Image (tube, helix red, strand yellow):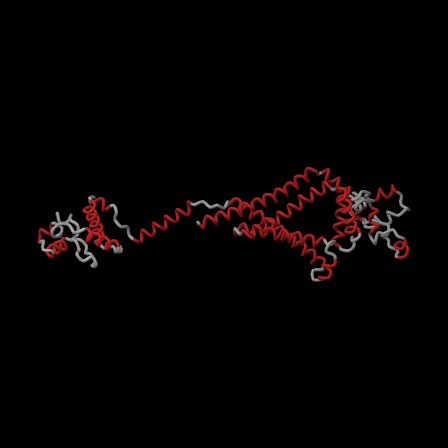
Length: 391
């Protein structure tokens, strides 16, 4: 029984593969070293324990051997415990606690520990900011596509989609161009913000921030300029609107429909008064238009200036004929058409709905400010995350 508790015999050849411990090997080793049966019972060490150098070589050899499942591996580990106990003063349990783990299990454990460390590491990028910016710009991206689609459909419905010369002849009086240009700007800006937030691209987020900052500055600067130079800006705006809306009324069917819709909705006529329509070629009160060309619309106004009869669903398109001539009395003119200009009507509408206008303007500014702040914050988060990866 004492032989079973003994460690395996000392191998005098460290380059050879050590044999698993057994009673036969111990006896053979004891006989080889001349110790006889007593030497085998004593562990096969002739003249006492092996020198420390031999123990060190044997331990290095055991550590280099992969675990192959043979029963000798446990005995080799026990031998390491016995050898360390002999050389360092420790017992057998101290050596057994430091048994070598299998190579495959050690690699799996290291991978699990690395994965756990990566999971514990918190990301520097805020998911709330990232996806809020993404979804908000995705909505604006869809709105830009909708505006572009409306413009293309209007051109197709008018039959001028393939007529390039007609498309570029009057871009300022064609509201379709306004839809397409506005939709294109919204589409590009929203695409920068949407893709930049989703892909965490610093370049696209910077472009988005620059464009949004410019729009914000133009809006704030325009509001301040209107407040400080209200009279001068109103005079120039009226002149430009006369040239655009009155003179070019018949230049584009879509623009004509837009002017008619504004005059009908605000119950107004002309920019400042019905006499503004004298600047239009078809409604001019000159003698040449009335006598030479015999234009029935001369000295008149568009039908959208007329006061609608609430009891009739039929629109009288000739209600504005000759309404500005000297033969029509002021009372008759007031009974037939709206005498207020659209500038005055618009001012009155703003004053009446001042709370709604202020809330709408505030929401637009807040959306733009939050979009700019979120974009800058996300850029800083991405920079911190990249700096963290470089450590």
